[in-house]
View (cartoon, rainbow, N blue to C red):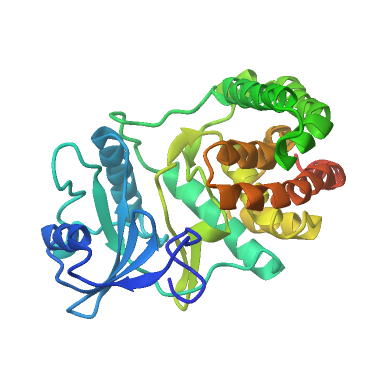
Length: 356
């Protein structure tokens, strides 16, 4: 990717790195058979590599068990043989793709090397881009259903949604109680004390909606699919040859509704929760793969959870002083987005009634 894009992540810092000052990246590249000419920091643990041959790569840290990395690779290689989908991952037939990952020593995290695609992120305010992304996700699900999924290292998340929501609610409750104990020391604590009850009500509504959706029955009756796990605007690159899907750390075996939820959430939070954008995304999906009311019931249940606030508050706990002030300014806007979803979900419910 290029311009404002960068292999699916918003960079914290950018800059061309001197070879001598970054021996780690140089050693890693050479282990993959690449002679780097320049190295640019995308963010911590992610580098853009300009090779002496003129090719460009992303060198990326993958702090996951080797079995999980091998499972991701085996699954994607099987999908590649099906064709019809472009994604950023190693090609073992290429000299630079012979090695799946490299570790500088047994205790260091693995790094992978993948092609760097030049292009741009899809615009969350463009209905045409949303339809394109919906079709891309449906194609991924369709191809994933046509392959035999490897079992060793498989990230099977089927049946885990209720426990996930309970855990998130417990963490939110603990942070609200901490805010009550900490008096008026920080604006974040004051806001959590003021709005904590409302946030916990949102979480409770989400959990009730998931229960009423007959989730466990759906897990038995709806065929699971291979899910990307974090589908959204920063994990798609629009190129001259078509869209490319990137970043597969969250690859999982789950209901398709999980990816639909992630896609709608990640795109629509940037688009101000305009339902026309979600409708375009879902219409694009339906051009390739059908949707049902049961799918929408599950999507709506997850969308009710105040995930944006939960994520922001969790990051706040470990942030620098500068970032804490940024999060404190961000919380009111994030809360307004959570509230705005009620009107959005009513329109999504009306859309679901048009499905079988």
